[in-house]
Length: 461
Image (cartoon, rainbow, N blue to C red):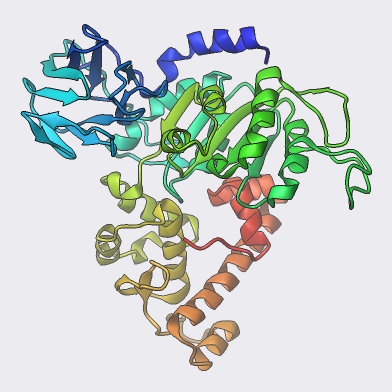
């Protein structure tokens, strides 16, 4: 897209930015009382899906000109009936009633001091507060918690737009699945959905993989090869883990996004491309910009729309829903999933989030009942070493009996059985549905992860 087109999108995308507060929402109002920006206000909506930032950075919802305020100084979030304030390791600190605070809860009526700026916190009564969506999922992204239902209206609008988008969240929260769901609900659904993983591509090959290369462009370039921008023409390109992108390559990516054109390595010819960009990251891009590890101009081009997927531990009620969904999806009898197993899973912290939970459900199906908490080796719920029950007269699985007979350590034996289970599961879906796309859709996981499992190179939580 050209510069003028991008400016139009930015103007039209304001309401799509999840960190943009609405003056008509309920919750609190932050007013600048003293300082260079005296009179400025920020309304914090009780349905805000992610924390709002205060600081000098253009990424902040309340942007201040005070030189003593850090680029990302303070985060604001409504928790229950109170306003949570979190100092983001600012240089000069955050003060309330002359006390330095790192993390505090306010009820309204307090004053904050950051640098030379004084802020007043007041309650804001809402005449008609917005209600979260009543839906329980978006595509293959499932969740009925308040944290997820707050996101669905925003995700729906983002899918209907064509603006660049950044999806943030911890490992395993479903960033790729959400990006694919947005693509499938967009006007580009008939086009390709292409994934470029910055962590899986060697630095010396990144430019070639992104933009393609001509024959003879470098040693080993025996034929012309299209890059992911050309492969995604007419569709969506997901740049996964963009926080890992080589800094030297970032200006070229910025140019490709701004001008909608690329040059293959070894060629001076311009190739026009029509691609929607979605970037995903587990990194704090604001912090990387602040530390000069990520270009601010590229960040602002990408983050026209921005959404943060909450961690599973913050999605109250979703763990049980997801566990039951995965159990049934993987072929388990719903009656065999005990309430005790659900309670044990609910007690865990799940650092690997939804992906880790799904792997644990698969292990439970493959190996038997839950018998404990989380193993230190991989974070998955410990499983019984007893062989699963088989119907009278039926022959036990020879592979499973062989693994048990080897008397391997439980983690080693478990992973061997899980890998075999995954290979059989993938093969069965492919035989039933015929294509990877349809089989992946039936499995409930993203196509790229389906391909990883198909190749036997599964990612650990």
